Amino acid sequence: MVLNTIINFNLYKVFIIIKMIFAKFFKPSLVAISIFFLSGCQINSTINLATSETKINDLIFLAALNEQNQVYDRAIELYLELSYAENTPRWAEKASTLAIENYLNTLALVSTDRWLTIDNNNFNAKMARLIVLLRDLNIEEFNSNAINILTGSLNPNENILVLARTLKNEENFIYALPTFERIHELYPSSAESAYVLSTLYLISGSLVESTKTANLAYQLRPNWTEVAIHFSRMLLLNQELTQGYKIGFNSAMKSTTNDQQLVFGDMLIETRNMLLAKHYYLNLYASQRDNASVISGLGIATYNLNQPGQAVTFFEDLTRFTLFEDQANYFLGLMAHKNMNYEGAFRYFSRVTESIYFIESHSLASNITSNIFNDLEGSLYYLDSLEVAYPSFSSELRLEKIYRLIEHAELEQAKNMAYHNQHLVNSSVDFGAIYTELSIAYISSLMANNNLRALDEVKILIGELEPNIQLLMLKSTIEQNLNRQNEALATLNLCLTIEPENPLVLNAIGYLLTDKLDNHNDAYNYINRAITLSPNNAAIQDSMGWVLFNLERYDEAIQYLELAYANFNDPEVIYHLVKAYQIIGPSNLYLHYKELLLNNYPNSYFSKLLQ
Image 1: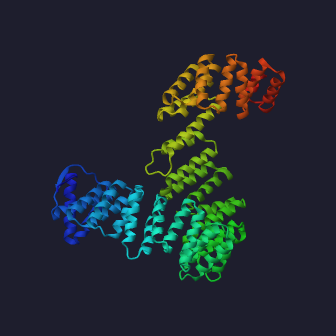
Image 2: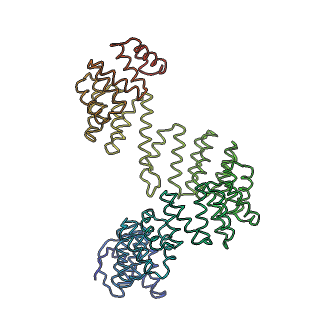
Image 3: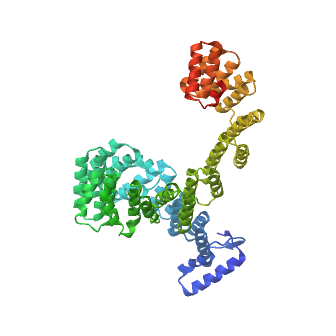
């Protein structure tokens, strides 16, 4: 078999020389280490690689090189080529592992199939195949393979747990529920089966079924600590606090490992049983005063019980443990902030390093600087310095800077910052969407201040994005405010080319025609189409009432306007009712709505029209 691979000729000479050096002084398996020297290199011209021993080594080298450079699809293809060349499972296993780790499911299906073809009794290959099938939602084959693994096993109970623990972190794990229901039918006396099924029922939200199967698992193996704690959780979730705590406590205390004792404490906190958690952790604390997890549990429980004095004591003690310093400083900062000790809160928050508390802590610290100390510039500088120190949090910290700018009504600067960050590679934040929303907010602020720049800004934004109904309708509104009614109509007609049956667009065109351009007959046709599509929309009901008023169909107009007012108490609707009742009476309704408008909306544009 011949493999065509692209590689620069000079680069190829370099890697051959490096390989020869490594081959002379090191074991052949270490030849691939030379990829370190070539990381990031570009591949350019064609060479032929045969399947001789020398060429196999070259193939290994190229596969490793592509993997090192994160060209995973190519690396997997090369490992598969190796699996055919040598007909050994190790390369198919390598390809499968790489494909699964990088969520390349199509290649993972091919790789695991190849792995099983070479070694069809390999348990790890079968488990890898199950992961891929679950991700692909091929539930029929997944179910068949899972059952076959268990029925062919000497210890199905143990393998039920292995199966569940292999799959539990998969996004599609819940889709395995029918499979584990079938497994439970096959092994009704298996505590492992009942336990896994209970967990899946809990994930699916079936509290009753989860409790039932948890009880069964506990009855089958009452001395299994993990199951007892799970059953305890179910009882606590069902508000059976006394029994739940008793079962969990007794099981945890009988456990030979401290880990299971801590698991029970964590579960009490997770289920928000803080008083029970405090009681439990105090019991452990009597003999484990230097156990950081116990001190942490006491701190969290007392904090949630609103016992700040005790919480502060525990968290201050917790700062002596390096792995728990961030948690301690975070909670100490929260309590200082709550007591309006902002300098103390900032001091605690600013000490937090890379952990799950990092972003929230430094968000609060920058917020204190910006909004409590009124130092926006200092807050932005603080976030800049954090970005230098912790580049892995770059996206989140830049987002925090945008938040601070928004809080200080610096919309233009916030918008520009989002714009310059929207093309960040591997960003966890969608700066493009934020830029769009901020642009719309900024344009709206310009409109509110009658700033002529609003039209220019919306044109720029429309030019940057794909045709967008929201932006085009915003543009039309600006054009109407600038008394460019024909341009506004043209913009709305452009909206119709994008969404011909959009009731809001049809309504906007109809209302513009009747209110500004005195084209009432065409206006009625558009609004009639809109109300047919969305009969309960108050804005469209008001438009229909107004166009009927302009067509002098007053009785019909009143019906729609009253209906719109019942659904939406808005000054424009009230103004339309005032104008209608002014013509057809009765006078008391005319005066009622007029007073309502003037008294409730004295600063409204429509109130000024009546004055």
